[in-house]
Length: 332
Image 1 (cartoon, one colour):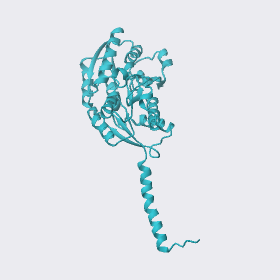
Image 2 (cartoon, one colour):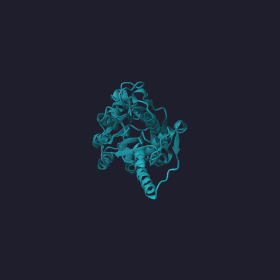
Image 3 (spheres, rainbow, N blue to C red):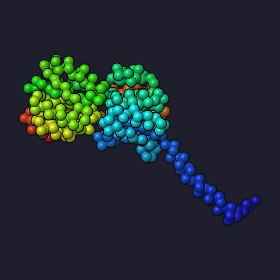
Image 4 (cartoon, rainbow, N blue to C red):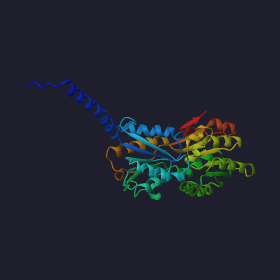
């Protein structure tokens, strides 16, 4: 039997299909899983880390803008904003929250939700911090990466002593706004300094102005070296720190290669780029259905020693052959 469709009916049918296409496209777009990315600093500071995170996601089959969306929230170094930023992501009903920039971000995310999965990056043992129940079986809705950033303070001081053997007094710069990082840094650093016969002077800075004020004390109390505590705020102010260290001719060490690359003498710490790729991998696995409680906390195993030979020459220091051989990178 032949069915004849009139012109009016045909136009109506085509019009209905055309109207349905945008709705179908919209439904497909809404179906994209959304990742909430909670950062303690700024997108400029974290550019390399975000790229590494996206690479980890890509390794699990997720590409931003294609089959996953990412909502970014940046505290710009104002850690007191993190709880509200985390709450925004919860209200957005994201599929998973990535808490980067230290344990402060992780705690803000943890306080905001007990149901949305959270992947964190922490600078020290997350069990001791109270983020997870154990490393192998985290339990709850959190898992992530232990950078060991703060726990390497003693080793960092030992390397500084080898590079600046004449040092007797070391200024230690910490951010009092980041209480957990400061407490951990000083807890590990003070006994380590006593063990090698170094005297330390603690300086506090949580703003650009306070960094300048800290360096102003160098005129009166001349330290032999500067130890910069591991903190995302100091990474964001790395150019200021490097310029001030050069102006005062003070050897500067830190846990972040970012500071060594812009003129610091040395850095020793976790390969942060690789760690953020790992965070991306875990995030992708959770999007595929894995539960944080079943994903063991990853212990960073890639550590890197970066020495800026140009800065050493400017300071009149000779880098020992042993350190040149041990260094992962020597900036000439």
